[in-house]
Image (cartoon, rainbow over all chains, first blue to last red; front, side, top):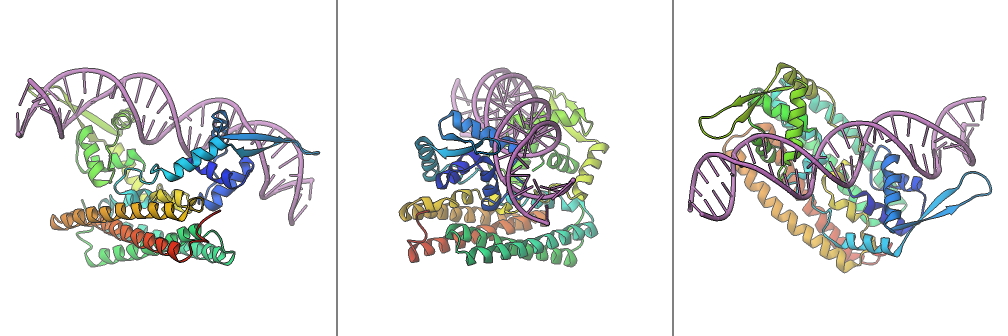
Length: 187
Length: 187
DNA sequence: ATGGGCATGTAAGCGGTTACATGATTAT
DNA sequence: ATAATCATGTAACCGCTTACATGCCCAT
């Protein structure tokens, strides 16, 4: 995803702490699990060495020093260049949609599974996606209420339609299985 | 994507050479660029050490020795366990659809771009996706003709619908831009 | 004979994960 | 009190990429 450019993007909007950037990435760029601290702070250190960001050490009356991060003009330029470039728009993988839905890597081998086990796998995926659909719907309506950035709202709207697409597809797959149980099994 | 399990899956269908596995991955699992030789042969070596595969050295009358790879019973078991498990079905990322379509990482920051540049970006994405749509349609009709594995055909059908979804979305985005040029710009 | 595909590898490096480690502040 | 959250880091490791290297076979 190009962590460094995303960080520059966030910092070009607001200066902040490393920890805050992590939180923003979770809620804006959609990483469910925490961005790991390891990569975050090492990447930040690298970026400082390269002069893309600067640290302002803020020493409060109480407690330990906090490091407020500012983007430099070089950092801004790097970010702008990236945003205007074609980098990271297409990763060179033809079936990139499979990357986004890792379940597919396994579906490729479903002919090795019996119809019962296959059906089970499909069903558990279905309930997972139904849950996700609800989650997206909630997040989306929240975004609409607080009139969030329209681009980011649009992205979520895409995501919602995508889950619906997956659900529809999984249902079709299960239908196939019931109609043609033989062709769908044994490789 | 869990290279090792995919390799085991392919080898459980047919024994083959390293090079052949690479080709299969390209056309079945959808990597457009070549799977790099580095990881392939080092992974294969590792798998041999762990007793998941065996090499049969085939010495032809002419030319250098070729290594035919066979899956072992341990390898088969490992593959079956993986296929039945929940591993690699969900990668723990809430917005995984963004991973599959890396363009989104950039869209997140489109408010930093002027409406003209944004429109340009959208247009070039559109033509890219139109091309891909054609490619998918061709591949899909080929698969239907030669009656390929129904699961893999279904996956491609998903992919096709997905590109169509992306195209529709990009068009909507461009429409937004024309109707509300102000809210769509400046962060 | 030349270029492209088949086939097999090695080495350096990078980006990211996992796990560990510490300590202060805030909320219950 | 004590648990959760804020905040900052380090070290080991792993999967994968990039780049290099070699040599055969086959078609034009």
